[in-house]
Length: 279
Image 1: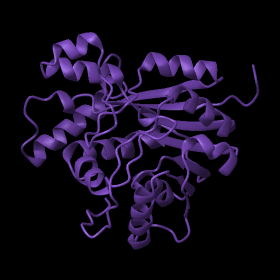
Image 2: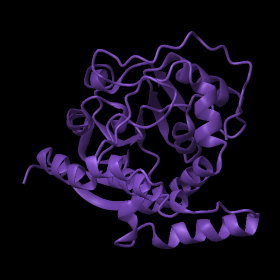
Image 3: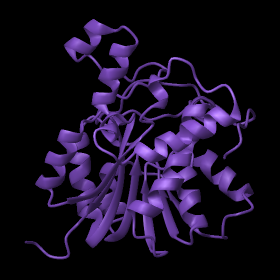
């Protein structure tokens, strides 16, 4: 777990979207670290990835492109598994935080991670590969055009390659709003965030049906799917003891790949495969 480094310099924050309609996170390093990774929901998300990725991916210490690597958690995990990782991240603040944390970590092999400050859209030029394994976790929902982004990821994949894709689930967001009493918002499907404040509601939450359609359009096969945080976000009372936390984690693990439960995971995690040759 990366430290919550209060001394990290913070630049003046602009919450405007990029020209492409994307949301970057300069100036929000501390908020990300505190809200997403040092809170129960972030801890559970990382625990579920630890549990699911070895099941859902063929991990053979191959080269990996980590797209939108954020604070560097996924890149560090992959490096610890013996992979040679290229971490691409458009935010200067995020990338610098990841570099500092990785440099201080005791478990990372030296020179296991290469850093590239670049958005997803330019990776076909700056990191063309082709890549046998790509991870792209919690990125598409922050882009103005997630459909085109998936097409770009497909271009980066080697024949027979794997894409580990995690997206913020639009259907779960609707259900969560209904549970909270935001009935009109849920009914009118006004679910997306605007990306202009510190709140971290994604601007382009994605549905499973869209992933099915976009994958098929790019010749990708859905090999596996799971829900992450299937139950946690709907609890009336959060776990109050370590034993209750352990029970919740066991519940999440038991049902994360079972239909219909996975469909309401806050995040949907996919393994997409690019065929060896065109059918």
